[in-house]
Length: 433
Image 1 (cartoon, helix red, strand yellow):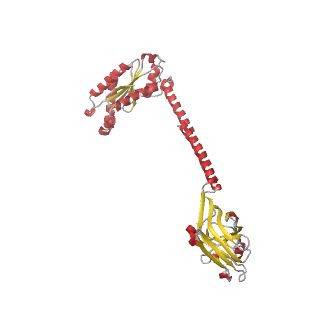
Image 2 (cartoon, one colour):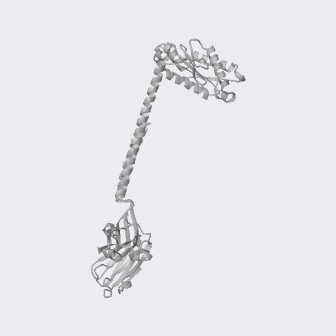
Image 3 (cartoon, rainbow, N blue to C red):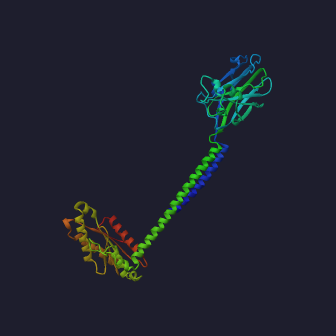
C-alpha cells in the first residue's frame, strides 16, 4: 500500500507538471476571448451623433455599405466652437454594461477619408452608479484615446492606453475618488472626429471592431497554478504521513506477532505462575495453560521430528443453541463437549478452549494420519452423544502437523484454515491442512 501511494504521488506530480506546461502554452498562444461588432451581425447598434443639439451645424449620418458601417460627416465649425461628428455603437444596455477590464486590447478595421490628417478619437463610456444616470447619456464616464489610423486601416489599441477625459471630469464635477479609468461596465463605444477641428467632409468606414483578451490572464493563471501546487504539496505531505503511519502500524503488527510467538515459546515460569491455566466453564486449558504446556514439551526440533499435530474442533451452528435455548443450555453443551473430547484423547494431549465453542487439541508425537483418525473419531463421538434437550449436534475439525522448524503460530494458522474449509464444505467433516 505505501508503495502504491508513492507511485500515485509521482504520477500525480508528473501529470501536474505536464498540465502546468500545457496551460502556460495555451494561455500564451490560445485561450483567446473575442467580442466582435460589425455590420453583418450588429448593424442596428450603430447610430450617428453630431453637434446640432448643442447649436452646431455639423451633419452626421451612418449608413451600411456592404459589410461595413460608414459614418459620413459634414463638419461645420462656424456655429459651434468644438464641432464633432461621431458613430455611437451601443454594445450593451445601461445600467448593465460589458466588463472589458479582463481584456487586453481593442482592434479596429477602419477606413478613413478626411480633409487633413488621419486622427480620430475613440470613447469607451462606462456606467458607474455613483454618478451615472439612465436619463443622461453624458453622465457615463468618458474613457478616451486619440490615435492615428494607418493607411491599411488595421489598428490595435491596448486598453490600458485609455484615459478619463479631463473635460468630462470638469464638466460633471466628478470627485477625485471616482476619477480613475474603469472599463468594468461599458455600454457605448464612440468613434469621433479629432480634437483639432478641420472643417470639411469626413468618412469613417467601420468594417469591424473587436475586443480581445484572454479568458484567464497570466496573473490569474499563475496564481491558480501556485494554489494547485500548494494544495498538491499539502496532499503530498498528508499522504506521506499516511504512508509513514501505515509503515509504523505494519511494524507494530510485526512486533506484536513476534511478541505473541515469544510468549508461546519463551520460558517465563515466574509470570506463568500468576496466571490461571484452566477455563472456568469447561475445565479445559485456556491459552495461558497452553503456553505452559508448550513450555514444558517444546524441545527445539525434537517434537518436529516425531511430529506435533493440532486439531481445531468447532461445534456446528452453536449460535442457534444460544438463540433458541438460552445461554444456560449453551453452557451445558460446552461442558459436555469438553468432557467428550477429554475422554477421547490421550493424557499426553492437551485440550484447550480457544474461544467460544472452538477447542484446540495439541497432540505431541502424532503424525498427520493418526491425528486425522483421531479427529474423525471425535467427530463421530460428538454426533452420537446425548445432548441436553434432545439437541442434535455435530462438529467440524481442521488438522495440521508441524513442519520442520515451523513456528507454532504458523501451525495454528494452517489448522484454523483447514477448519474453515471444513465449515465451508458443509460442516460435520474433517479437513487436513
